[in-house]
Length: 133
Image (cartoon, rainbow, N blue to C red; front, side, top):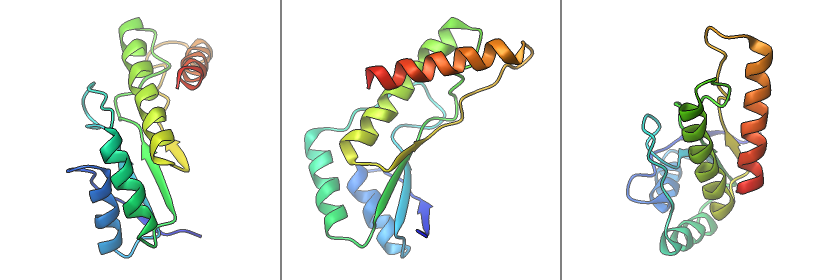
């Protein structure tokens, strides 16, 4: 079993590794962007290389990316679903670039709508994100 913590990637993802090491972690989880804003972020090649070097030099065995809290892939609002799709694609791409073991997400809710169609929308949006990432 891996024991870890959610750590800040402020200053670049390599800093998250440093923070995890300071806490004695063997796994870390990060947000790849501000978790409360619709501003997807892509890491530069330099940031990615620095992250991989930091991981190799550490005892951290696993990285998980946590997608933003705002995601609602089940929403009947097309704008919200579109922003969710864009943000989820960014999280999946960050996960791939950094070699994450997983991307954690909360797929959303029907809110006041019907659950069945909401589940269908969530599934379709997540499948599209996977196909585009």
